[in-house]
Image 1: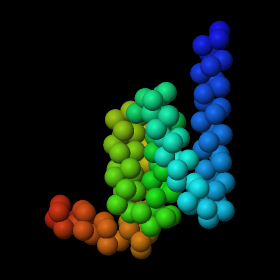
Image 2 (image 1 turned 90 degrees about the vertical axis):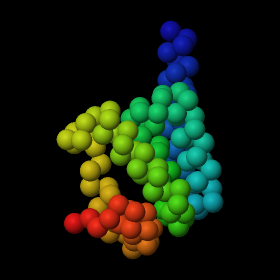
Image 3 (image 1 turned 60 degrees about the horizontal axis):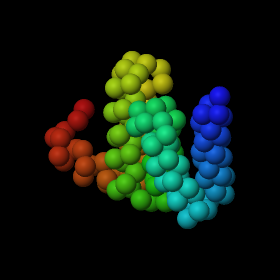
Length: 127
């Protein structure tokens, strides 16, 4: 019973960290949000494992934080990791698999040069 309370307490702590980071993110205080998002992801991976839904959400949150801070180099690999692990865990056709996230990112003009360099030139033309 004590172990269950400890696990529940750890989840509440991680959720609180994530919520605080989300508040900073919403307030435009990315300098405060990013370290919390990084720590939340690190601890969630340790406690839940790399492919747990909470870890996947934390990975995506950090990627979005990096994107908002114009840190595209670390953002896109995190989005790629999230998609890969979600497909492996849930399957490509599962409604929670973010199949549309790459098209959403591709529509973001901030990602356009990064995507062009990373995918289109390396992988050849995509139609």
